[in-house]
Length: 360
Image (cartoon, rainbow, N blue to C red; front, side, top):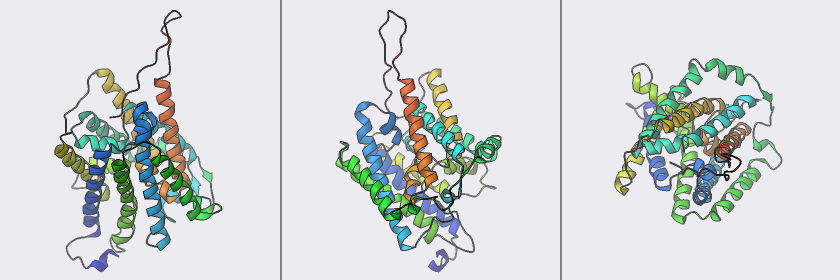
C-alpha cells in the first residue's frame, strides 16, 4: 500500500516514525487531560475509581468497535499476529500479568500513565520508565531471557479457539457484548461527560494505529511491524535507540513514546499543570523501583501492558490478550488489598487501615 503513494525520499520505516509521533501526541494530550490509567480504576481512592474506570472502559468500547469494523472491511487481519498463536503460553501470561498488575500498584500508575507523567515533570515516573525499559529488554533479549523462554514453553493448545470470534455468535456478537457492557458501566460511572468524550477519542487511536501500521504503511519491499498502541516493547526500543541509534533503527514505537511525552508536556504547560516532582524518601524510591522491575518482567511475559494487552489487545478478541488483561487486574487488586488490609499492632490496640494512596 505505502509504495502506491509515490513517496521517493521517505521510506515506510521513516513514515512509521512520523505516524507513531502523531499518534503519540494525540494519546499524550488526551491522557494528560483525562488522567487516563486503569490503575486508578482498580486501586485508586474510593472517589476516583468508578470515574477512572468509566473513562477507560469507554475508550475500550471505541477501540473494540473501531478495530472490529476495520477487520470486517478486510483492511487488516490478525490471523498471523502473535495474539493468535495456536499454543497459548498460559503460565507466562498469568505470572507476567499478575506481576505487571502488582508493579503498577507499587508505582501508582501503569506504564502509559507514567509516560504521560514524565512529560509533565514527574521524575519518579521517568525513573520508573528507565528501569522498566531496561528490565523489559533484559527479559526480551538479555540475562532474563531464559526465564521468559522456560515459562513460555508451558503452553496450552487452543487449535482454532484462539479468538472469541471462533465461539458461537462470532466476532459481531462478542464485540457487541463487551462494548455494550463497557458503555453501560461508563455511563453510570459518574465520570465527567467531557472526559468520557475524550476517552472515546483516545480509544479510536487504537484502530487508527492498527490500520496505519498494517495497511497504509505496508510496504512489501521494506515491511514494518504490524503493531498497535503498546508501551512495553516501545519503551525498551526507545531506551536502546537513544543510547545506540547508529546500530538500532527507530520505528513506530520510538515515535509513539516520544509523541506521548511531547503531547503531555504541551498540555501540562498550557494548562499550568506542569510541576517538577521527585521521590520523598528512600522507602518510596525502593517501592517504585521494585514496581518498575515487576512491570518490566511482567509486561514481556504477559505479551503486553494494560494498553498493549488491554486497550489494543482485547479489541482483537484474542484469548491470550483477554487472559493477560485479566491477570493484570487480579495482580493489581490482590496486592492493593494486601497492602491496605487492616492490621493489629497489638491485642490492646485497635485495628488500623492504611490510607489508600491516590494514583499518580
